[in-house]
Length: 131
Image 1 (cartoon, rainbow, N blue to C red):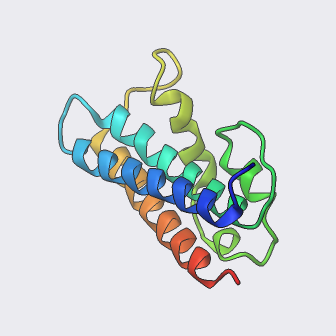
Image 2 (cartoon, one colour):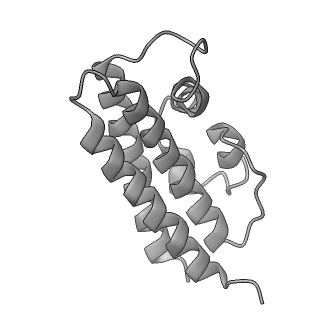
């Protein structure tokens, strides 16, 4: 029996919040801004997937945040955020593999975390208001 949308959404959101905590714990270490940025992207991705799960919307296995957002209703609060979705999406690859872009800087990691915090907070709020 497949999990119900509500419990599935809760699981996705819990992992998103865990990734956000991991990102925050890594920032400030001069050797780890790439990993902090990657964890921030993962938090954002999983928060969006939590909302999609709760709405019972199937989604592909992708790290592309704009692609996932396109599956939400246009008036959804996540779609209303002013976020640099493309840059945050880049960290899914750039944060894991060498040769995929310049090394991350601490300022970039902080920006990624700030964006992810907003996304997770809006997703959490949206999940609380779904009937």
